[in-house]
Image 1 (cartoon, one colour):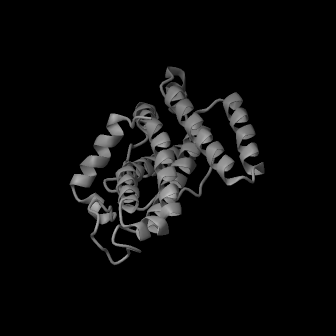
Image 2 (cartoon, rainbow, N blue to C red):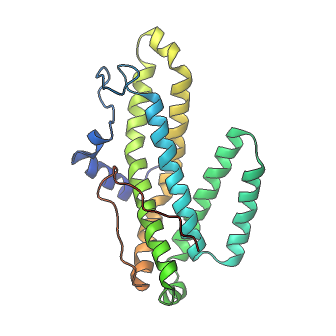
Image 3 (cartoon, rainbow, N blue to C red):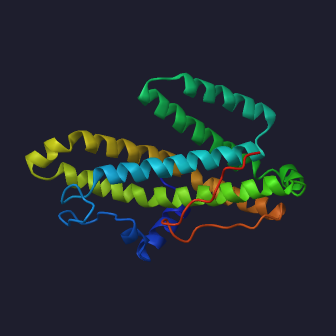
Length: 227
């Protein structure tokens, strides 16, 4: 799946400004960092960052979805969520989790452009507006982090797969996990630009200040308050 131009531009722009270095992206095989488990980079560190970015996107997309989706749409998503909670197979859980996030993002992108919803958004109470503002910021942060993780994971997996036979054998399982993480992130990134672009006019109509992170290293905002 192709990553939307807006997301790529945002990620690469920050990378050029030095964000990528701050995040420890291993672009040159053979360079050892203090946190690396090998001269090719740290697979565990990458997988942890990928998991955190994906979780941040999942949670914030769910919050935005609850703010804009109809009762019928929310009921259908609750059924998928129930199925996810009942699933024990890790591979199936990951597939369902990605399906839920992509479906929610598609709905957000469609509903946020609805003129009637934009009128209704003007009447949202302060709590809902704050929730949407926080979720949008965290969603943008997750998308920014994920955009940088795609080239990082690609470089890391390629490096670990082209080393000496001992290195290749040692990291074979990690490389598989890295490629799976990159594939998942790419799938999610396909809809993030649409959500961000659609939410801005809606938030403007609701008089909600649009705040986005300037760096992938920024911390998520507290999202403990729910609707």
